[in-house]
Amino acid sequence: MTYEDFLDEVTTLLTEIYNLDDEAAIKLVVDAQDAEYFVAHDDKEELRTVAQAKLDAVALYEAKQNRNQTQRKQQQRQVQKKKAP
Image (tube, rainbow, N blue to C red):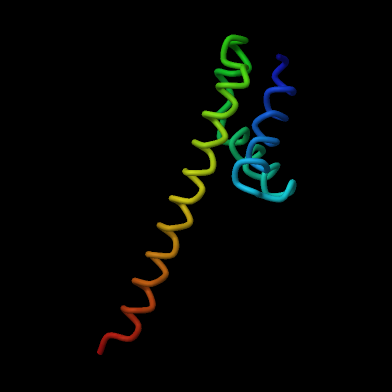
């Protein structure tokens, strides 16, 4: 599969597995590209499979969820600090 087809597959899996809208799934994939997450996939054709696309979709989604959870916790700490006498 071509690199572009692989990215399309990851995006499609994000919408199917996690019920993300197209815009959110595309943003996750584009952000991962910007962070050079897919560099190895571009270089090695054997990494561009449907099975690998599923693994990457799960990894990207879970990383996003973890970042969101960390941000929420940091915001809660800031609010608590402001409330403390």
